Image 1 (cartoon, rainbow, N blue to C red):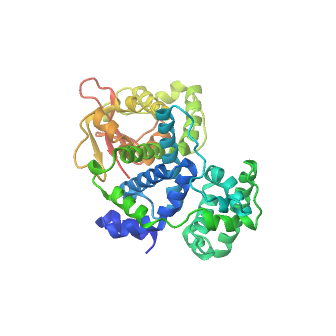
Image 2: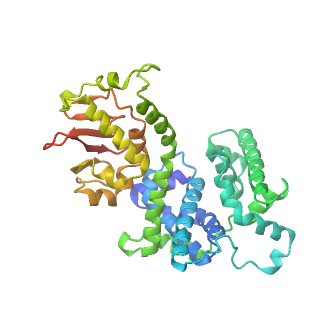
Image 3: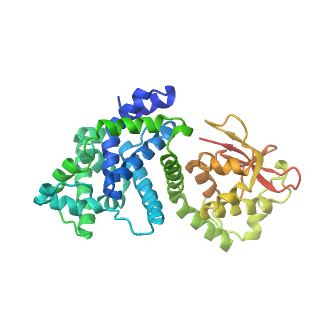
Length: 391
């Protein structure tokens, strides 16, 4: 079965066998990366468990086109970074984050071993600097030992195109490694990646990871569970960077009173734009109040100010989507489930939203494709988010 089929099977029926198969496929990849980044076998196991705890939670939300190896490596970097930051605070001394653990002296004495010792500490940072398509190509070919035909199938391209992409990505990785002082030849680098980068995970590691990921939330180890929550937040907000550049440009236009009008580029004064919308049917006699509310909401999201966003909601907040069977009672409840309510998709709709000529009905003012609905507070008449529709 493909990764997507296994994820769908687990998300739909809770199949432990499907999830265990995914852990068996990828635990070696995740654990090896975690060990390179933390330099500690115990910490690497915690990171591995936290990553798969997160995968168990997110299985139903991942796109069928997701390259799972790439998603897991991204989550591993966040988890390892968060754990090391926590350890540095606790120990009050610099952690040897990139020291390889328990490597036999005989292996290090060989040329290949010495080269790997130079590559390992910087490999994941160099991979992270590559474009996503290049990184996924390398992960599939050398970390998962897939054939070029299989790489092409996963990336949606022909085998020849996959070969070119892998070759190009390998050249870019070599250049990144060279900048870090880890020079490797074109002939040696593929061989050493295949041999060293993602060894097969041990049976005990797979077993403990499956148990941690599928345990009830209250039964999971507190540090692993906390680390998984931290990674979920990091990944959600990191994903919003795609929208932030566009949002920054929009903010600059707003501040200067210049707007891109629907149907083509144009410009108008701030006063003209603010008087353009008519939201009286939704209960807002002054369009400027709605425009100001949206701009303030966009600012809070760009700044990552969750508390201020939570204050802009009307409680109990109605959330339509998986996992929300009843309204969210108050600010504390929203903050606890923030990344589940303000997903990358929902927050992205808000950030790219122009604060004028929005669709409205008697129910309220709609942002984007209907992800967010704004309605007046019954007491004050001020705008508030009254409804969130999850994708």
